Length: 350
Image 1 (cartoon, one colour):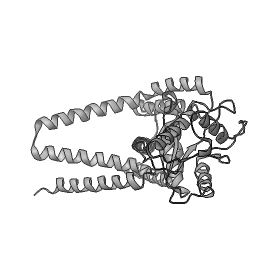
Image 2 (cartoon, one colour; image 1 turned 135 degrees about the horizontal axis):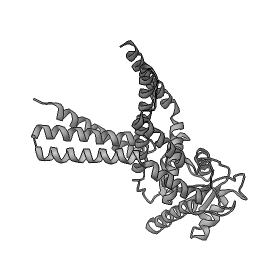
Image 3 (tube, helix red, strand yellow; image 1 turned 45 degrees about the vertical axis):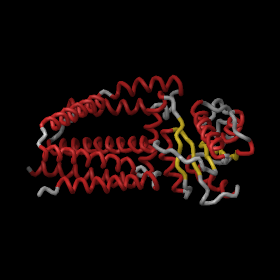
């Protein structure tokens, strides 16, 4: 009896249940992406095993053709992605300036070109053992980065599937930079508008008034704390002043969560208070992870982001998450280095 399909089906069930638990109880985790992709991987394995058992030539051909087409699209897309990245960099530069933060798509595009040169033109000229070492090291690092990028993108996408109940006590709105040092810009305005929309819907449906917490301190080039500008904007757009609180000391997302938690307690709330936070869609997962780190039980609602800004923002989020898990990545890079050394040594011996 062939136990392989039953074994694969069992693993699939376990993975689906684990994913469900994470989405319901542990949503603030980048592990969600790994779980989703493992589910897809085992589903594909189960599908292929079923095709073999049923000996269905038609279904096997269709699945095979789809896999080949998908592989070609991915390969061509990755190889030529520098074109889109350069085009996006020009747009971002025109609208956001020439800062390092606005140049991430440009830097990534240059990286893609270097990878293309490495794979298509074989530029490394060295003794065979050294060449093997370098090729294994670089190709494995590139594969690892692509894998972590894909899982991060998956986590970000899945995290957005959150439909909170209209029973919240507090809605935390995370700050962003002010335009000309005093005005709420489009990016921050989208966050506040999303929060007001949820706030208004909850009052309409349940007559329960949540408190809107505007969180953001004053940057060196700002004329007032972000929280104060946000509060003024919200009141002008339909929020009741008595339903607003400001947290005006934070300078990053970690402090947004930490100081907002303290403000909730000083307002009479506690660990049982029902809290949701609002930020831009690309930022929700990392903000949720930081909320967990300060002991704040809250999930995020994502506000829309202008498309031209999204690639740059996603790259920045990936880098920030990479740094947050730097110990794990350092271990992986050490393992990759040792594997490359081993390959070089084996080549030298042979």
